[in-house]
Length: 289
Image (cartoon, rainbow, N blue to C red):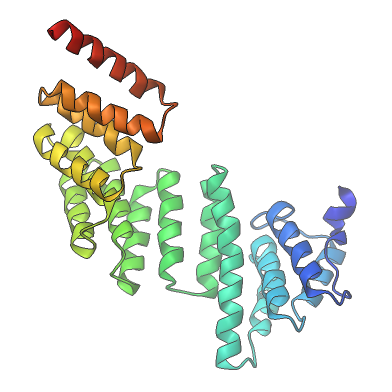
């Protein structure tokens, strides 16, 4: 392990770009962390040599490693800036795109592991390379939301939409962030805007229905209609079937509730709450006979 941390995965003298790329990817994904206090001198030297490699993918990944681990160091930042000098516009664009993808992939992995603070740092570094990238702003917003920093999440969703307004899921997540802050009216407005962008976005219908069911003064009849839209577009959306059943119970239609639960269990057969709810409704229906 200590040998790997010293840089044995990093082979600037190799003549096999695929092997170099694989070693860099492993090093970036499992050996580095955002803004480390230091790097072994040999590791930093190897990364700098790889950052001058003729293969664009290898070069971008090495730059991403340096940026993630030591991008807060002035000398490293100068090195990163020099790496972008004297490039043609096409090469500059290609290098930046690969660099952003590498940092974004690391940030995505942090989010998946439940480490939003680390993800935030990595996404912000990606935006240093490509300011205004709408997908990165969206993902940074999601990381802020994961961390419970909903106001900052909203700021990032807004920035994403300023670049590309045709993103219904950004509106959906903006609505969820507002709902988490207690702004139900604002959340409903964002979800309706999502449906204006794409009238067939199931998550917009699902979340709009859920807000009407539990956060909008209790409007189960309206929720039924919206959940039905969601499952008509995406029948595999098991939570929508289960919530549809809940709404049916509230409007007094137990048979429809049972049918919705059965349909949801086709896609999430191991859901114990849904199974228990179905058993209870079926017993109630039997007593009604």
